[in-house]
Image (cartoon, rainbow, N blue to C red; front, side, top):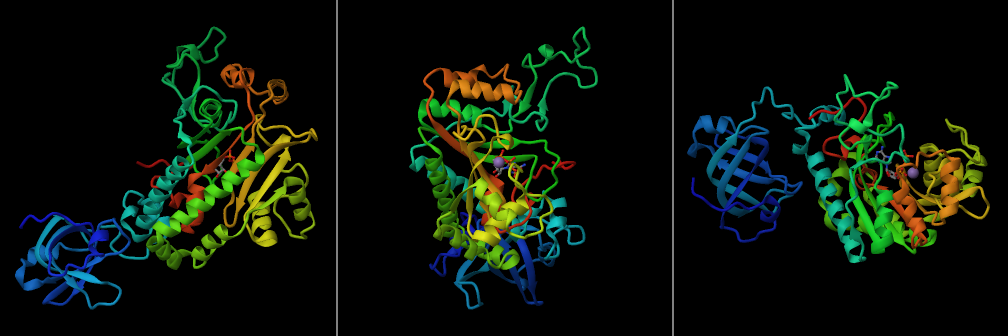
Length: 465
Ligand code: ATP
Ligand code: MN
């Protein structure tokens, strides 16, 4: 076959130089036709849209045509032709066909259309070949890019915080341990405890549950940083909103107080949604049509209106007076469940809500304490369909108050001297938050299970590949 340089389908569909000789390569979505002519719908992953290839059967070997079935991979030379079919501007009239890889029609798992998302989770190695996961993975890419773009434009620096950490002050119990000790026969101390001085790092180590503490170190030197990396939580919560391995974005800004922190979170999330509408509309329209008819409307709605900003105490009052039957009780001091968060957002305000000033007992030790002695300067951003999408706070910058809180909460701080040093030397007010990347993607794609917005989901009892 003549060698012609390949055009991606996304670019080809925009071309108008009819008569040009072109080459496309991709995976066959469908092939139909008659004895004389075949119509191949070809997709190469560059766009949700397929290009139609018209093949004059008589010019090709029957054996060759037989293996061009759904899922097979082909290279096509042909002429670019204006199409009269509906829904497509161009098509290719083939004059050369090469098969790279066949896909046996009796065993290829994606032979038929319309598989359930549950089934596709079981074949996560092949699901990127479906329209749905192609769309989701492209949106995921664009959102990751937009995150870097947003922070770069605002003068934030991308800080790489460690994935293996020795601090367990945040997530004791929900951390994955990292060790080179022989788990069947670990080194032991004279008292019989596991002897971590013999472990790789000379102490026990874990996968990070958040880059925040290290992020604060960066903010106290560079002024404004963000992290964007994998995060691990061994929480046994089998919900549609939790993964054991997920990605988190954590900006941290020196001199920002809670108000500026909320402004940043709102601007950030609106920027990302606008970026998706501007750059992913074909994929979003497809997902909307398939899974969530109100998706585009909901995205536009979030951009258009100011988020409600409300103290926790007032939020709880609204919930108590709502007359709504909740599965979990609601009272001042309760950690709000997703049903409570969604009531405020979907039923009461019908807008995203930033809830602030939570009781200190249900929040982390590093949050800045309010004058009332009862609450801390926390902020959770609550979204329709999702519940909590962002969790953040102004941080306690006062050395004495922070140390006292650490003692009260009996947090193992023996290895945390470095964190306290930020308050010992040149302390400053500062704030930050964490956005769960997959929660953002749930919102932007309209999908309802977090396992469907990450290529290789890790959840309890599930770690294939
Ligand atoms: P939740 O109450 O929903 O379990 P959290 O309060 O434990 O979340 P934070 O520690 O505040 O979460 O983490 C910041 C953000 O990271 C959350 O707002 C959420 O978007 C995301 N996130 C937290 N845990 C998970 C998880 N297991 N899987 C996916 N995203 C998560
Ligand atoms: Mn939170």
